[in-house]
Image (cartoon, rainbow, N blue to C red; front, side):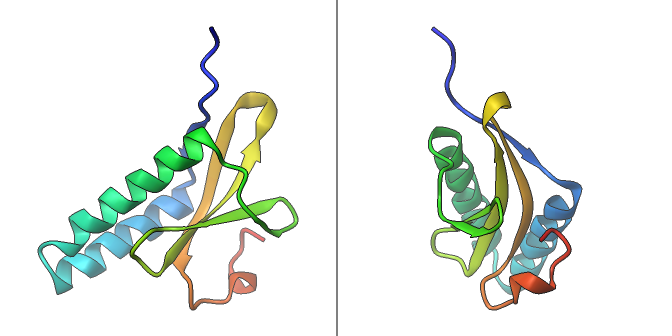
Amino acid sequence: MKNSAFKIIVSPKAQIEIEKIVNYYSEKSEKAPLDFIISLENSYNLLKINPFFRIRYRNVRALKINKFPYSLFFVIEKEKSIIRVLSCFHNKRNPTKTNFL
């Protein structure tokens, strides 16, 4: 039986954003960086199973990271079973000011 799970590919831009978030939390707390990483991994696992969350702009979808004020913005390549994470940024930022839209 073919594996129906989607593969997650994190863009270099999103990876840098994630690293900055982890670094920020590491300055504030010993526990927060690990909690963020766990929530991020849970988000990835959720996307692998069902990535069809709300479309925010054109074909870009978003998923809020549980317990943190950040969202993953991503596109689905359904025919390849790939999720491309374009950005991970704070929910108070204006998404139209990012360069992935």
